Length: 71
Image (tube, rainbow, N blue to C red):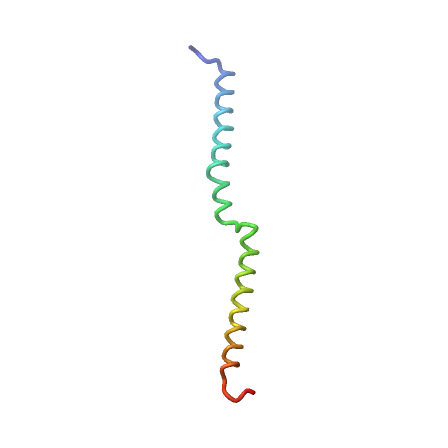
C-alpha cells in the first residue's frame, strides 16, 4: 500500500495534533495542577492560622489564670 503525498501530509498533521494533545493532557496539565494551590487550600490555610492563633490566646489566658494573686 503506497501513500500519496497528500495522505502523508495529512498523517503527519494528525500525528502532530495527537502529540500536542497527549503532551498537554498528560504532561502540562498535571504539572500546572501540581504547582498551583487548590482553591480550598488557601481557605484551609487560613483556618489553620486561626486555630493556631486561638490556641496561642488560650495558652496566654491559661498562664494568666494560673498566676497567683490575680484575684
